[in-house]
Every structure is written in C-alpha cells, then in structure tokens.
Amino acid sequence: MAPKRTPLAGVHEEMGGNMVDFSGFYLPTHYTTITDEHETVRNGVGVFDVSHMGNFRLWGDTATGTASKILTQDIVGMKMKQLKYTHFLDQKGMIVDDMIIARIGENHYFAVPNAAKIKLDWDHFNKYRLSGTAMENLSEDYAIIAVQGPKAVDVMRKVTTHPCEMKFFNCDFMHFRDLDKTYLVWRSGYTGEDGFELMIPNDDAVPVWRSIFKHGAPEGIKPIGLGARDTLRLEKSLLLSGQDFDFNHTSLETNVAWAVKWDHDFIGKNVLMKQKEEGIPQKFVAFHLKDRGIPRTGMELYKDGKKIGDVTSGTMIPGKKIGMGLGYVKPELQEYGSEFDVRIKSRDVPAVVVNPRA
Image 1 (cartoon, rainbow, N blue to C red):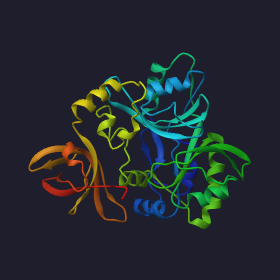
Image 2 (cartoon, rainbow, N blue to C red; image 1 turned 135 degrees about the vertical axis):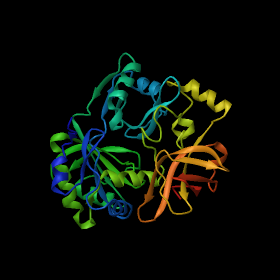
Image 3 (cartoon, helix red, strand yellow; image 1 turned 180 degrees about the horizontal axis):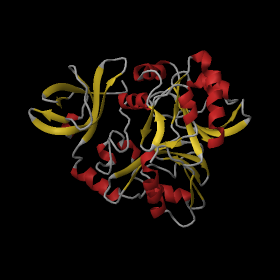
C-alpha cells in the first residue's frame, strides 16, 4: 500500500525533500543534510510538516472528567489556553502513549496523539469515555506545521497579527495576515527549542506554509525533515513513543515522572502507587560516549561485565561529534556522572550519564 500523502507532500517535492514512507506517511527525511537542518533549528528557525500526528477534540459536560480519568496529568487544574504534556496508561500501568493536550474552553480540549498510535489511542479514549463527553477524531482534517528555533517568535510575529507573547506551553487563536483567517496555534514543540505548532485545516496548509517562508526569508528559514526532528528530540532526551516506551515501561521509570499527578484517579494509578512503594526497578537516562562510536537502538549496556540495560534511542549528535544514547538502567546508575559501557559490536565503549538540558 502506498504511503499516505500529507496536504504538504507536493511542497516537499518542490523543495527537494528526500521522501520516504514513515509509519505509512509520505514525508521528507531531509532536504539538505540532517546536520545542517539540526543546526538551523538550534541557531535560527526551521519548519516541519508534522501533519501525520493525530488530532482529537473532546467537549461536553463530562469532558474534563473523561480526560482526568484517562490522563496522568492534572486536567481539572488546567487554565484556559494552557497545554500539558501527559501520559495515559493501560490497566497494567504501562504507557500506552504520550500526548500534549490543550484546554480551549471550560469543558473543551484539543489533543495531539502520536501518528503510529492514532487508532489505538482513539479506541482507548472511547473505551473510557464518560457519558456526556463528545469526541471527534479530526486527524484526517488537519495539517500541523511546526515553526521551531530561537527565531520562531520573530517569524510568527510577521506571519500573524498576534504579539506571540503567551508563555511556553500555552496556546491561542491567531489571525494570519496573508490569508485573513484565524487558526489555533500552540507555543510548544518537540525539539528542545522555543517554537509554535499550527493547527491548520488541510485546504489552507499550503498557503500557510508559503506565507511562513515568505515572511521568514530574512531570518534564513529552512524546511526541516524527520531526520533532524529525531536528533533534536534525542539530544534533549525527549521520549519517542514506540521506541523509548511501548507498553513496556511505566511513567515512573521514564524521565518525565512529573507528568503523573497523584491527586486524582486515572487508569493504571494503582500499579504506579505499588511501584512507588516497592521501588522503581529501572530509570531512563541520557548518556554520552567517552570514546568514538554511535549507540543504536537495541545495543546492550553493561556495568562491571554485567548487563544492566539496553539502548532505546541513539545517534551522533550533529555539530558535536558526540555519540549519544537513551536507555533504561538500574536506579543506582541514574545520577549524572554515573558510568557504564555500551557494547558496540564486540567493543565495550565507556559512557557517562549526562543532563541533556545543561
């Protein structure tokens, strides 16, 4: 079966994108090089097509209760136009998926699940939906364009009439100058940089993309592919669904245990409470290699000759020439500065646990 084309597929082809089948979607891995695109986002501004991500809308008298029952985050305490990163779990306490959710009304929410799990997530939400909650799967109707990097604010102030002064992890409806239309825009992103994610109806995706590049030209704006999207999130130790967790880890084992709020009941809470009391068996860490090599998914981690974990994600960080990886290790090795080895083929390469945000 041919991969699904996003509304921006033709634009990617025009701009020279190296197109591939990514989880059933026709998307670019890169336009120039992953290193160039990675550094563009770190130092300037780049634009991603993330239209393969899902779009769910929840509303109704019990929508807050439904979201609170399913999600680990504090939904009741969300402010209007606030975003929250959250997990949702199965009955065994394992992470089904992560997502960002926005509160856009008193009992009105907009959520973005991961591309490969849209159907699974939709079924999960429907399974636990309370009576009185209406839900709509808009994943086929919206494109998502991410404008990311330290110059993203400058670009968005030209593209829209909005001052773009809302805090990070907030959202608003912005008027776009060239189209004379208003769209929902999040100040978020999964790159470790400041940025915005634009929720655009399919028919308007191409005009919005072209408007962004017109106004962003003085800032050196560039299109960015999936390759740099992965290295950017990995460099900052941001979890990738289906790779860093996939029904095999709890939220407490990850580096975002703060996404679990204990003052409400949610699916899988009893399992997490038991794990919290009895001890968390493994913890997610970021590490840098101290010698040459590139850690890859599935490689084994060793300490004093004994296996202590596996690499879940790994790469050579563009611009730094440092092999970096993510993985789960025994709790005593989670502290920054802890050391262990990564087995790369037949060679054990020393690695050190690092703070990816430092």
